[in-house]
Structure formats: structure tokens, C-alpha cells
Length: 219
Image: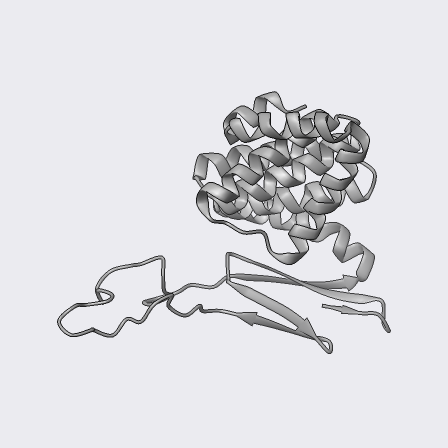
């Protein structure tokens, strides 16, 4: 949460809550998510067994962890991603590590350090691939594409986009609107730089690569 009037910000690092927003200077955190289908019995069929965990619903005991910090806006925004990385590494939450590396990579590109961003995205991609998380894999590949484009490697960037697109299609993991706009911008610039035919050829190569191959061949 940022106060433009005071030039101050509050940041919150957590261990995987499912949503948040900021409105009128207030940070709101969603602690639980609802079921993707009804849990009550239908005729004689049990929708969800009550004595076991399911990824489709939050039920049973939950433990939440939050790390809150406040300070000057620029200082907070520059520090929070690396703070999240250090915390998630310390507690061994690798999904959080992958997410922090993706955010750090994006910030490095924005600040004009694309080579460092490539390294951050590669590490995040490797972790996401080992965990088997399609949403994290695709975000890492798309972030890697932007970083590779910024380092002057458009062919590898197009391959990374192709690999991400194939995984999204195979696993039914759509990009949210903000991510989609960012990918569209990268793709448009690559098409202009490479030409349509060269871009399409690199994109198709990427579609045939899995994320593990993309880690070693892109860039």
C-alpha cells in the first residue's frame, strides 16, 4: 500500500494467501478460497471427503505468516522482492522463491539490468520446473523472454514465448490481463525486430521445447 501524499509505503510478505488488493490506502488480504465445486452430497455421492486434504478447497487448520514493513516508498519497493526471496529461502517455501525470482527479474529489466534479470528468471524457471507448477513455469518463461529481448537476443526470446504458449495451451493456464498485455508487447516488438517469418520460426521451435530444454538453450 502506497501513500502518494506522504511518500510512504507498507509492504506485506506472506506464504501463499490467495489474493489481495489495495484501495483508498487500505490493504485487504484474502485468507481463504472457496471450493471449485459443491461439497455437499448429491444423492448418494460424496462430493468431498471430510477427513482429508484437497487442493480444491481450504478446509481444516491453516497457518498464516506475514512480514510487514513500512518506510519511504522507493526504499520499500526496491527492497521487498529481495526480502521475500530471503524469507522464502529461509523457510524452505520453494514456490515462493520462484515467485520472488520472477518479480526480481521484472524489476531488474525495468531498472536497466537485463543480464541479471536473465539469471534471475532462469533460476526461477528451474525451480518452477522441478516443482511442476505450470503457472510459475509460464510466468518465468515470459519474464525470461522480456529479459532476453532486452539483452539483444530476440531469437531466444521468441523461443521462450513459444514454450510458454505451448505450456499454457497444454495445461489450460490462461494469462491474466496484465500478464497478457505484457506478453503482447514483447511479442509485437519481437515481430517488428525479427520480421514475421523469423519470429514465427523461433516461436515454433520454442513450442517444441520443454521448460528444461528452454533453461539451457535460450540465450
